[in-house]
Length: 377
Image 1 (cartoon, rainbow, N blue to C red):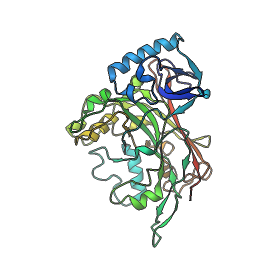
Image 2 (cartoon, rainbow, N blue to C red):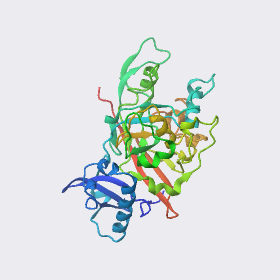
Image 3 (cartoon, rainbow, N blue to C red):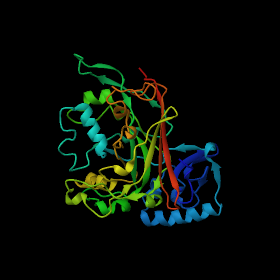
Image 4 (cartoon, helix red, strand yellow):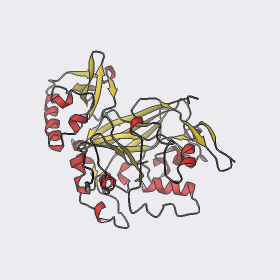
């Protein structure tokens, strides 16, 4: 993917130098431009105060920053000379299950003699509530988690490090303007509340997850680490990436219907130890982020600045577009990439994202990288 950090992108992040406290910057080419002087809310250790100001201020500030960057009037630093921080303080974290291909693949792996999709899947965006305190910025090592495991052939569970550690290639959406308890956010109100987009790797311990998740869903198999990109791409930078939703059958209930679907044409590369092993396409996702947000709040659940919700694993129809090792190895039965089934200690995974830019070229969203460290027993 090309450089992709031009004036039509300008993603926001938080950085430090040896001499400065954390403040907000934007990425331009191979530089980090210090924008803390543009607004008081940008001279902060997170983006939260700025995100809370809403779409009108986001738009005005983006225009002002673009002019200042183009005229080279703001201080800047080489990207390799700064330390990037978690760009926003995470409020709540919710993860969905929005890919038809991913859900169908898992159904075929785990329930080969049954219908792949469960009865509710085409009627609502299935999701679970994650652990916000273990959302970490790209580059943070991931310690192999320990927990209970029980294989189908075992008589009793055992405790120890996960043996089936996996990735989940995802896209995340960051709430800027929250909503009150009891209120709902409609499908067509998505852009009034969502500030921008981040890459997400929802690391998953499949063996821990498979033993614990019945009947209440994911818990320790997911909560040990979720990595996000250091750069938040504002929605305005994705205007040229807007796409049509795939056909939804049956038609969604009225609260999940609207004119602003927010399907996005975003391509992803999954890189394992320097080798591209998959290219999942976000464009084919069955449920849109606008529908996810509408469903998240339809019961009156409130949202807050900094809340993060993610798409769930992004997978395409072809084997080379699967977004998890569970799928790439078909449940661990078909090794790939030189013998891999699941993650080994020392493995490094990088997720790279690209999309059409407003200037006619491509923009590069922030990558998500993580290395697997041994378990701490």
